[in-house]
Length: 343
Image (cartoon, rainbow, N blue to C red):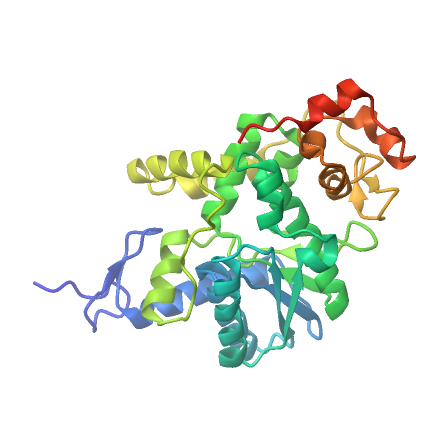
């Protein structure tokens, strides 16, 4: 016997919400999903009327749903926002070039301006070239650091007031787990924040409208709405550390569906004991980007690539920053240590 929608009690249910367990018809699911995102936006006061908002668009399910829902809610509730799409081309043949075609179609479908910035134009390197030098073990470190800075640079070019990203509840819970496992108190303290204030020149505030949306529900929303998105995983990410946290989280979710939200709430309620030393935020002496060291991570990674020393930005090599800033040559022992890479 067909199950009726538990919300309207009129239509046949087509899905059971992973987040709540309710059986809903398509229309009621759409409304519930959109209203929850709207509630997240209004409760956290993410936007102000008249702001220019850049939507970080990769062509994947999260950013495509984010663009669709942001445009819909902006019109439905008169947020008064000017929306734009912002994409980063990391230079991954067979992956990013294909996903950017999806972004370009999204631009036409949603009639939003689009800006694409590339690693090659910003750093002189593509991820394909970086992987050839560093291997598949630490490549995600390079990509994550460069992409964060590239988004800020693109946002400044577009003169946007805020960037909104497609980070969902699963992403946030994974990040909490990763920071716990690494003992990274500084990141653990801020990783659950739904928005970041401006951290200095060259840094645009960010927010996560999908912070409490389950990944499974984003997939269901995209599927039933027949949204155009790119679903292939990055070819360089199988060895990413995040993958282990994701597998663990999925195992927890299969036993207890509320695990994702529970972990997020745990992260939100964690406090750091008084007297614990925290990194002091400053600016990079070379590029001016935010950094707790003399050189930001992007500049150190880039220096390592340009010197043929791929391990320079992996791990803690702060004592070498003075040498890098003054362009001093490294000793033979330092060079040998930083050159070897495990492929």
